[in-house]
Image 1 (spheres, rainbow, N blue to C red):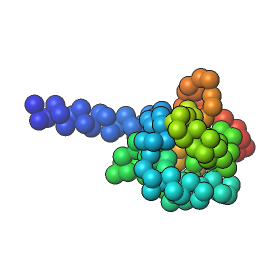
Image 2 (image 1 turned 30 degrees about the vertical axis):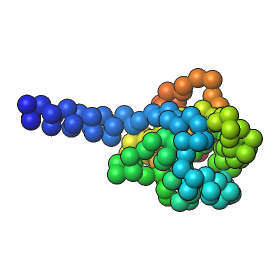
Image 3 (image 1 turned 180 degrees about the vertical axis):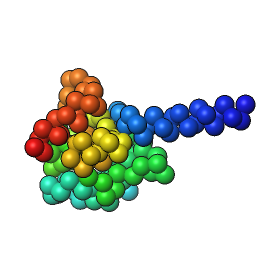
Length: 149
């Protein structure tokens, strides 16, 4: 039984390394986000750097429910389908306008494995937001590679 559990755990970890991960936004209401994170919302998306600062990374870790023992977005190179500035401007606008209603936007986080990171041009992950469709991770990588060329 113990060997079976170890095998299952190995398969799960291996598949994450080989295939990457697609994670949908897990937090649907600003009231669910800790005040400590929201109090720093003005420090997010203030530059076009692809490397997330501590505030941006911690906020995104929370809304995507990332287990930071396995992957932490702080300091990672992240691609956005529009821009990091636009993403956080949209978050701030909805926060100030719709806090009582809770209105947050949809977003999908694509975490890349080692091969996908190389193929994408060195990105650790990508965030696609305001998309009507879930884009396959391979297509996200292909678009990033094309953009880099």
